[in-house]
Length: 189
Image (cartoon, rainbow, N blue to C red):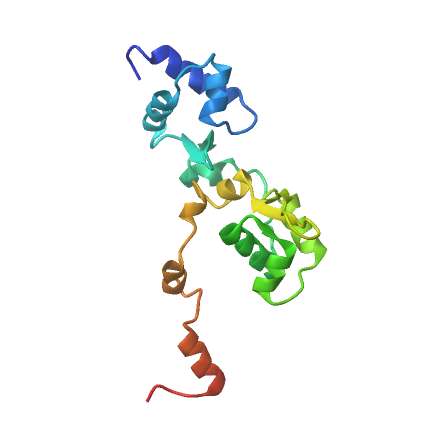
């Protein structure tokens, strides 16, 4: 990290270290008087690659995080994994793939009613937010994912969500023909 841009790189680094929350390049730029920070961010990514901390972008926001292979060293107590109900997982997936989406749309896709507490749990986790109201009868509330959702699942953007072929290859989706055959007891012979 040597050269004419050292001061800017150092200023971006200090800004990110001091920030309590991840920052967009625009927020960093405003904090530094309008400086163009993209090149400095790229320099910092390269500088921290392979170190104990790394600079990452999640949902268009930048922050430092512990290198994933060292995170276990910093845990002082056993972290209890948050368990979502099946309804919670389904609602979260529907919101992630179809956002912005209303409760009625979630229920139509799931085929069953969604308990009010299901969406509350997702919002308390910080993974889902109210994104506004849909224009139409009753002006229903619509929901979308948050940058915290992207950060928690290690996604840069929603485009990084697995596609149907990836889900099928991972064994998370049964082919319709195989599921039908299993239900009816038919074989392909």
